Length: 73
Image: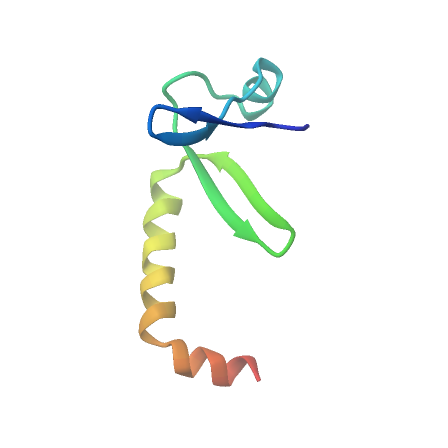
């Protein structure tokens, strides 16, 4: 599905068509979570538990960057 970036006030945004909202099971006012994957960006329904887990993971990746880099080799 092709989406267009548009100006919304002083920001940029994407308008989600009704069909996509229905497939995501979300409506106006709901929150989405954007996850970076090897294939691109994945939009999912905002999950408070997942958001907390992602915060912990991001903190660990920042704090242990050198160690994780060595493990990746």
